[in-house]
Every structure is written in structure tokens, then in C-alpha cells.
Length: 65
Ligand SMILES: [Zn+2]
Image (cartoon, rainbow, N blue to C red; front, side, top):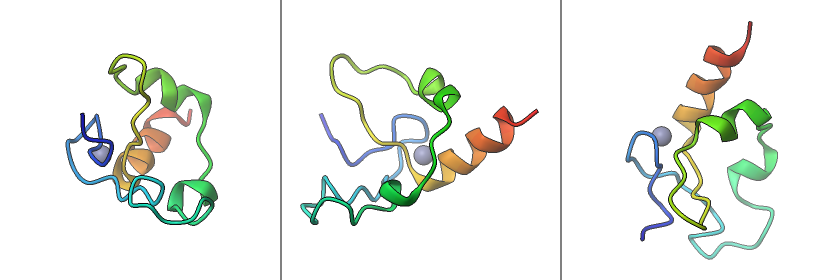
């Protein structure tokens, strides 16, 4: 199980929490996540894995109506 890999595109999600940086420094702490995004993230068991910034942007543009 690799917490650094985006479950959608398989790329590096650049998660600061996984990298051991102080909490609050990851890009995702400043990003807004519409709840629809979580419906689109594949479930990998009990663990939620961060997706990457590219996929956030793609999902946002596909969600907005
Ligand atoms: Zn991705």
C-alpha cells in the first residue's frame, strides 16, 4: 500500500502528510474538495488515499454543471 500514489491516475499525489511534513502544509489543506469528488475516488479498503492536484482539477471541471 503506497499512500503517495494517486488512486485515479497512478501518479505521485505529492501529499505533505505522507511525506512527513507538518500537518497543514500539504497542498490539500488549502484545496477545496467538493463532496462529489469523494464519490469518484476508488475505494481501496479502509484507507483513503489522496488524489493528485491534476485529478482534483479534472474532477472539478467535470463536476461543475
Ligand atoms: Zn492523479
